[in-house]
Length: 554
Ligand code: G16
Image 1 (cartoon, rainbow, N blue to C red):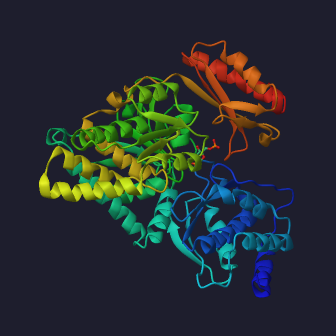
Image 2 (tube, protein in one colour; image 1 turned 135 degrees about the horizontal axis):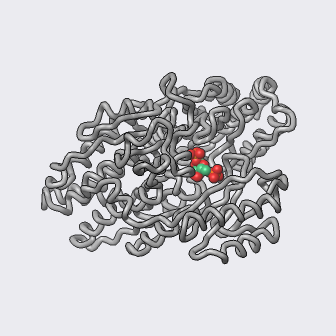
Image 3 (spheres, helix red, strand yellow; image 1 turned 45 degrees about the vertical axis):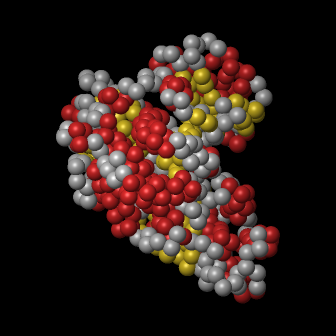
């Protein structure tokens, strides 16, 4: 790094000092904390994104969002050249950068890292970072901090893409790096065109049946606003958006949204007994998660939740059906893999295995699931909380393209050709960069139309085991170390034995704990044969967590 560059970094960094006593770490999906302490972190992530762009000679994405968290929080997510999350190899550097105590230290760190990674500040390639933010009030000033960070790398360009869902920004990065047009209008065009194609490929006898409207809870976030745009471009699907974040509709993620609905299993605000039996869906604050539900009759706002596991099962059934048609005719073996986490309901994993599917578990976090799903011709991954997508390998996609051309000349209109076309359209509709609630909702709707299923029929694919999730505030959540895809606690010693003792008391009992990477809590998950038992198990495990690590309130 030359003196000119070092001088600019020093000068800019001095405008974004680290708040006293704050230590922040890269978590499940980037940095996340109360918005008031984040400016210096976001400024430094801006520098990191520019360095990543120089290193990869590609466009990088930087998104200001705290997704499902409360409105006073904010955060920053980084999209790598493929559109996926920042490579895990750079996470330790991100931590060091975010916590460098002063501008001098910061510049020294950058200089050493650039040397180690062979990053040139004076090469012919200039960095470019695409910027997006959700609707949080703190977003605008944090975006400015990111811009300052990016442009403190000489020649780097910070390109504002406006207010977006997180998956839209990831999609844009992916398409820009493929040399394709990647405006928001291109995104909308792609998902509505591929939706239309998939609707055209539905068997004629199914299309005849009218489907009721879908009611979507937009979490008072950016997703509701974008869905209002998408729905105007669709035919054959009527969507009503509630909690779209308009003035007076309510607060972002407060009593609304996918995280609330999935964890509390009650109706979001704006829904009630007038909706009994109707097909409803819920997005999270930045629209990268999706769950479905229907309201139960006269039941204290209780819902039947159709979570990420059931969306995964629906997608897997549809894809498998297409592959069976292809395999029969072609004998072409396609490796289909399913990726879940420890939060997957035990009944879902059993169901998927009974269907003959290969199921693997990874730790929580899209960055882990996505990486695993890449290993298959088609990898379907979903977290129970509704974050997931379908990945198609480049070689399988090119096989599909070739087959499509061959079939066009030999057996136009055959079942086999239809299956090839469906798979190609799914790969266009579903976001290959990251889980995307908008494209996810459209794929669910097509498949329900294809199968002729109501939400109730879909929900009956298998019966979820009763489960409960709790959060426990502790003194230091980093004191918990887990292993085996987060199903066992290694530290503190003795805690896993205490959990095992509790689990042994229940039929079909299962429980695990893990530190959240987005909130300052320990998460507790429990499953058992009845709701009462699942609740008891979760509560007693939470008490052990508090005894080992907490403030001693239980
Ligand atoms: C992020 C991640 C998800 C993860 C969730 C909760 O989602 O992308 O993979 O499941 O955080 O993580 P944790 O349990 O560690 O708090 P989002 O939608 O909040 O960005």
